[in-house]
Image (cartoon, rainbow, N blue to C red; front, side):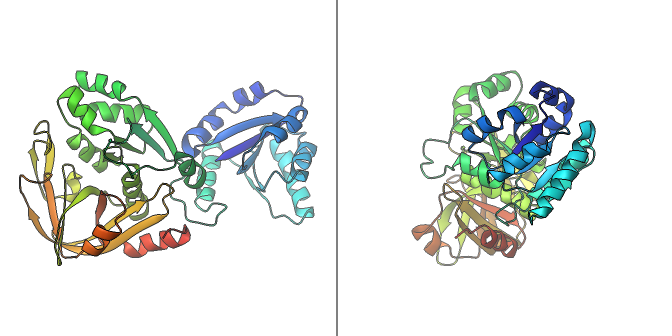
Length: 380
């Protein structure tokens, strides 16, 4: 999200940064805002250099009405939403600008109030973007702990597209930083600490490097983080993490990220070594399947209705979703530790058209909500 701040030539950029420091921090942290400050003396330079689509214009001072008129006349601005908290004659200037827009046949509005009220209204406003679509992700911060695992050759996403269309910011976390933290604590404490420091809403980790470096696993840590509201995926699989994030944002459900493992003409079994503990009625701590070390979660999940889904493509333009009933929890040393079987034949889809390997399982019947999201965002 891009916010253009306009100020009079009697003030400086530094004045705006100091005067509105708290609001600017909130806009960056809560709204993932990219902020540009200009005065009347550099409108031309900004116009020549800018490639941004401006979402909001913040009026920082009075005396900017003609500057706004100059900018508007270029056709550069598409937004008619202004931000003004009232200080420094900002509201007075905004009211004059609003009248100007009205004369031009434009319907404008002013976001006005305390810092918290302004930020809340911006977040609410951005739930419906200029595309007219439902946007539950505005301001979300995703941490990438290392790169995707080497075997995930078709599970990446376009990070610029995530930011521009969905309002998601991705933060690269040096895996060595995490390894150093694990060596003085444990995976859960270390990952949670960095998530708090970086204000992350979601994260995914190149987890097999942790096994090699620390002789332990992150499986239990990810399970616990998902229960605590931080959407946490493994193997650096961003498409699956976005599917898990959608399940949390749209359906308010934690998600089990799993591998399709056994397919028959009547059933499909999924398995993986981490599952949110809250999705299980019984859990057993075992070693990690592939490595035989660390801790992994074997969870017995209720035999009830679930939604199975996957959101994929580099620009997240494809999705699979269906509903099925769980009919069996089982355990075999030949698979990842949590194993659950559904009464559905997914062979035609998985063997011919599958969107990657990992799929996401959530409790309840949510296909209608997800398909509505798909229609609103042009997803196949």
